Amino acid sequence: MATITYLTKIQFDFGAVSLLAEELAGLGVQRPLLVTDPGIVACGLLEKVRDVLPAQFAVTVFDQTPENPTEAAVLDGLAAYRAGDCDGVVGLGGGSSLDLAKAVRLLASHEEPLVQYAMIEGGVARIRAGMPSMAAIPTTAGTGSEVGRGAVIVMADGRKLSVVSPRMIPDVALCDPELTLGLPPRLTAATGLDAIAHCIETFLSPLVNPPAEAIALDGLARAIGSLETAVADGTDREARWQMMMAAMEGAMAFQKGLGAVHAMSHPLGALPELKLHHGTLNAVVMPAVLRFNADHVGDKMARLAAVLGLAAGAEVTPALADLNRRLAIPAGLAEMGVEEAWLPDLAEQAVADHCTATNPRSAGVEDYLALFREAMG
Image 1 (cartoon, helix red, strand yellow):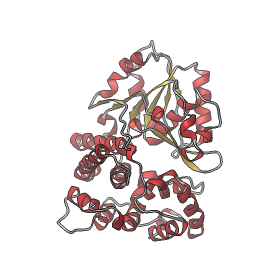
Image 2 (tube, one colour):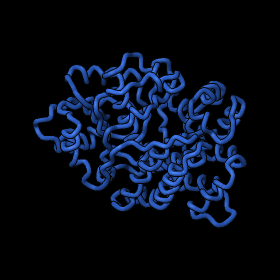
Image 3 (cartoon, helix red, strand yellow):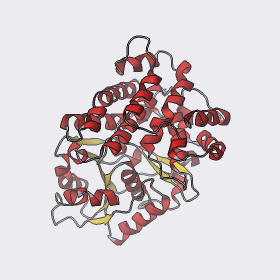
Image 4 (cartoon, helix red, strand yellow):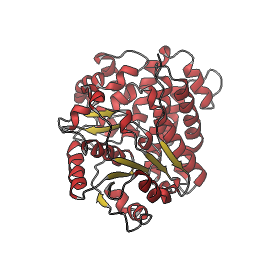
């Protein structure tokens, strides 16, 4: 039996952020907590969003989202929500801010601790209806968290876990490519490769969901056709539009599950010694995982090759590795500061990650250890 669900309202185009007041009013929100990060404040995007909200909205701002959101930061955001007597949440930023906003929204109506709602802790069944309303405004074209059903948080025990439920999906997503025009090339590349990873992994997942596969392939085609243009010229409006659509589609296809790429990038992103970007990690480990899965996905590698515009018989993995090189992505995990001694523990965490269950090929600790070593470069 295949369960297929798409449940979110999306306002998509240049100028979409101007609809925020209208959408919040429709949700009955008058006192929103606006969750963002210091970078969004510094580049002026916070003020741009606040300017579209008339004085009738009493806005409380929490702008301390860390690069990899933590349970401690969620609790700080929750304290701000309660201090402001807020009645809804607005997430503004990349995946970190949007995920933290989702987690604050959850704890505003659910008992602590947050870890009990993690998917691998059986948390899906514990997430009830009745959470405060939420609007999501992405400022990067990568995670697609604005339409995703999960929030990835580094818990107090150090594990980077996913809190997942259809009830976590924001009530409305305002996808305005205008907000991405100032994104620097390096971050444009890293977030764009994140979108590509989402499209590929969801397409290769063994679960049955043809609509999700079609969406994933469409998103991949858009990203492959536009990412390098967006990196080279961040003011190219068409490329920015296409990349935001690709990111959104990648997350819409999450309904089908992810795989070993994300099972590896989640524990890597939780390393306290490093602050590693999720999209960059996905790009770096992707070639090793694709080689591992290649003989277990039927004709899907050939279908991916066609979307990538490769000649008949050409392999997908070298093409993606070449894309990484062209975009100046690190050649391996070692270059990013990952140490060999950490790999056994990372492999144990990858096996426990919920994304392992939807990898096309079964993977145990030794498999993951070999994958991490291959990805070291």
